[in-house]
Amino acid sequence: MGSRFRGIVESVKRGGPRILAVLALAMFAASPVVRADDPAPNPSGTPAPGPSGGQIASWSAELIRTTDPAPAIPELVLFDKKLSVTLLPKNGKLRPSVDVRGAFDKPGWALYIGQTKLMAPQQKGRQTFSIVAYLNGRTSDLTWTARGPNGEEIKEKVVLLAPEAQEFRVGAVWGEASVFLGLTSFHYFQTQFGSFDSKTGMFGVRYDSPRGSSKFGLATDVNLTYFTLQASPSRYGPQTLAASIDGTYRPNWTLAQGRIQPTAELGFHYITMLSNGFPYGFSNLIAPEIGMKWQFDVNPKTGWLFQLRYVPIAGLFSASEAEMNLLLGRIWTLASSHRVELDLGYWKLGYKPVESTVITNRLLYIRIGYSL
Image (cartoon, rainbow, N blue to C red; front, side, top):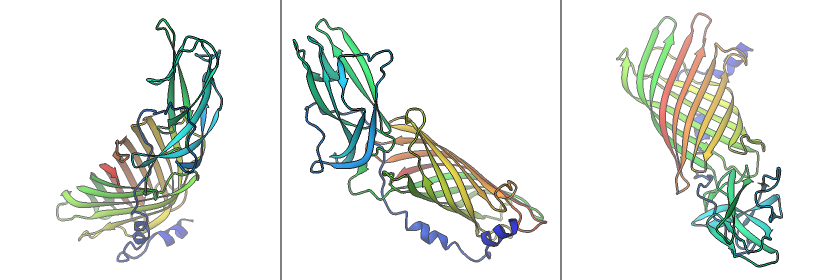
């Protein structure tokens, strides 16, 4: 199996990375991202608009209410546990929303949603309502408050779980493209040569397809080291170019009440060294790639990203001839729906072009990125 893999993963030194032309076609679009402000229900009592006022999405949201031993406000009745999601235009964006319908029957008490009074105190009779609540991400909270005639209050929090819900910038539904700049610590070892170490700059581009109702998607990224800041031996300045193209699968299930979303990745990885006079190195390695990515939403505005990728060069279980990529990222969503990302990453490559030669390449990097 090792010889078969090497036959497909290594080409001539002067070949050039034509695969990047294919990857670049996917890098031109802007992005849909989850919006991150407070719930904004409309207490007008009118149901969510139909197609004339918004787009009916194929997603649904689940209304989760604590009922053991009993709801905090038993006089509050919410009719639907599964809600259809509608995309409504607001501030130049399409925001996911749901129509929450219910009734309240507690004479002398008023009902609030957040800070908005939904119902004034009534002497008797059951009152019904319908509100439009905007979703803030995979999970959104609705806080209900029943306020009595003497100022007493009873609060109850209801969770809206919608793992697939997202906000789109109007006219930008092709996916998310991000650019990155960073610094690297580069180490290279080869039998008969020894070690080479350098500090370089880094440039990266990443594209993720839209996260609609489909579980499947596409992810590509290209990373290039450039501009050697320090090198030992100082007469050399090789750089590394790496690119990936992966099909992605995002299951319906989530963890931590929807705050952790896993994504599986399967595709191909390309890596080469740009010698710049360096007499050693490797060129044009192409091999399968498998990976997992987890995104953890701390709140609608911030989150964490962890990614693990494995590239088997000589065989699926040959750890000595493989590439391992690890990434830990911190994500901030801005009011404009663009994202800022700060990543700490590490990759290690082991490779034996011939039996007597061992190549090890390690890269530790820190970078900052911005979604277009």
